[in-house]
Length: 142
Image 1 (cartoon, rainbow, N blue to C red):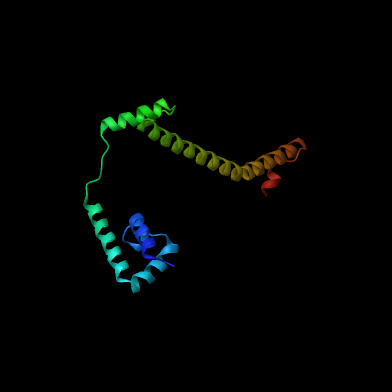
Image 2 (tube, rainbow, N blue to C red):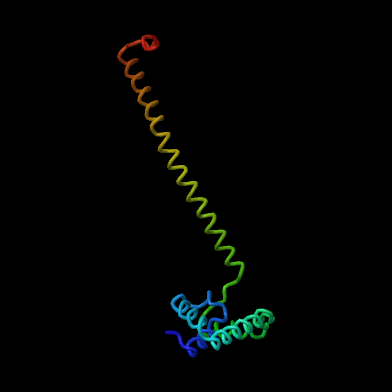
């Protein structure tokens, strides 16, 4: 059962758009909004506040704050990772995937050619045995 106090807590946490609220709370909030004008006013106020927040400038961290955070992380034993390292890792991963695909293609090609090569080798072995037995190869040609 949704109360006005619970609606206030949820509106403060999730804003005025019920679609952003936890699914389990949405239906109860809609029922309360349908019967209580104070609940509707509270949600309208939350929606107006959401509009103000969306028009405000996005905060940006200063270089000083960034350096302080990195220094604190380094002091805690964490090492900053350079941005180019990320792209290098992606390149290595992509080239590794390419090599793996090429290797798989080679295996498939090798397996498909093996039957043809084996047949040719067997035919050569039969002809060789025939020549050793003194059979003229013209007899095979018809």
